[in-house]
Length: 132
Image 1 (spheres, rainbow, N blue to C red):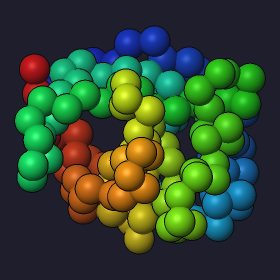
Image 2 (cartoon, rainbow, N blue to C red):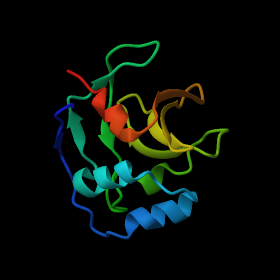
Image 3 (cartoon, one colour):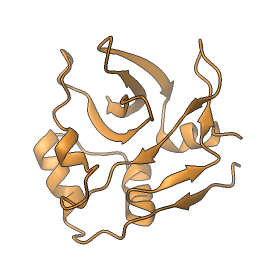
């Protein structure tokens, strides 16, 4: 099990904001994402690197905040400028890409290509792949 510490966590100012985001996106977020947001809203994980099937040492920047007053918040990112309207963003990388939920699975949305890369079946499984 990966031992993750989270920096720059912003306490949720409104517990109902997760539900409001689910209504806005017409999606039920997976429980592991909701739990991560409740504990680590807007936080940055350490370790923060992960691998895809084609690239090594990519960086997970931060969970998007569910506080509307924070600059990088989920409400400002949704909807994505994507042809796939089923992508629900919840985190970012340093290159402007978003980690998204689609059909309960976790993907990285590459904004310049408007493509997704499969990462894991669950957010918890994805977190297990984080490394130094």
